[in-house]
Image (cartoon, rainbow, N blue to C red; front, side, top):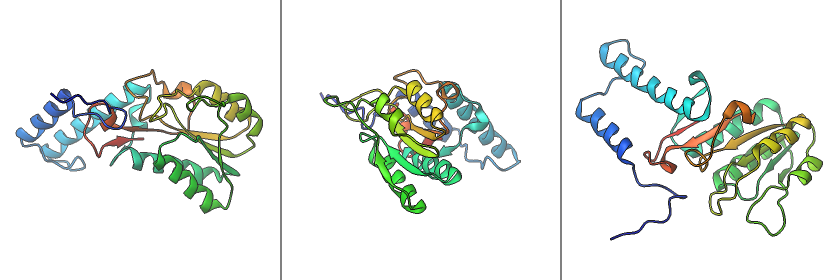
Length: 212
């Protein structure tokens, strides 16, 4: 008997996802959701059902949800799309962020010729954001990227306090919520992040599927 204890890295494919995929394949559904014929309309209906389910899970509107090829693409779209739009004065990332989030932030800083910096953490903790130090260090048009839940230690970022700090400094922030979905409550509009990235394989879905 195998005991698997690495769900933070990836989860096994869940029964609900497996059954939905098998049913879709068995019924011969293969339409392009942009086509107007019957097969296309069926595919479009399924796609929109999935979009609504993701939106409901985080309190967003369906029209705000964009599907991607995975969490990494969603992260890069969030950082690059929002960051390039605001033209950041600085780029700050939490030190415990997933490597793809760090890489996206480093690339953003390099594109705009600004400093890449780490957000301050509480000393002696396993990745707890120091909100007071963050408030002091932020400045106008600062771009901030954080993980909702640290992918190795499970440390939870105080997102409401972070939003108040970034908003007060007239900055902008994006959230990698891949490790939070299905584990902690997520209300995207209330959190105030400019973009939220998600990953299916962290919650029993297939690898290679993400959402922004």
